[in-house]
Length: 153
Image (cartoon, rainbow, N blue to C red; front, side):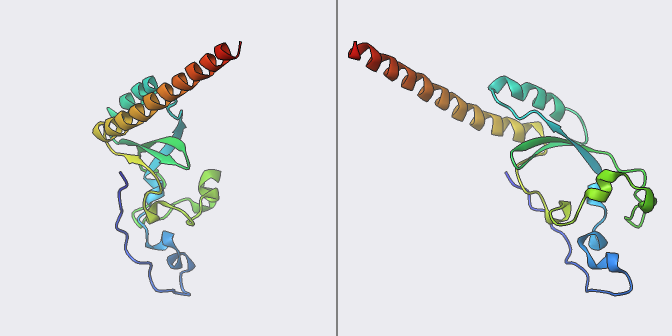
């Protein structure tokens, strides 16, 4: 399930405030209202148990970006001002300095997003069905190979 986020159009260019001419200038500081930690990508059905535990907590969601899984924890940066700008911009952490608006929260999610345990469980159920079908195909293929080797002898 992909969620579409409605964002206002970018403001008309203004030479008075170059910041206003960017996505950041029209944004409310979406990237400053959470932090995300990379988590293990599920490789087998039991891996979803930890993900389910995360989703039982308030103000969290899980998202997938370029096949990497993240736990997103909503907690506003203490330096985000009422004007949606950094109150200590010159001393901001390197992670903030490295962030660009080329592909950002203003554009909406780029991959799978799980807002609650029900969405995660629905995804897990489909994922497990595909996983089990793949396991069955691999087992059947191994049996066929083993049978072919016996016939050759």
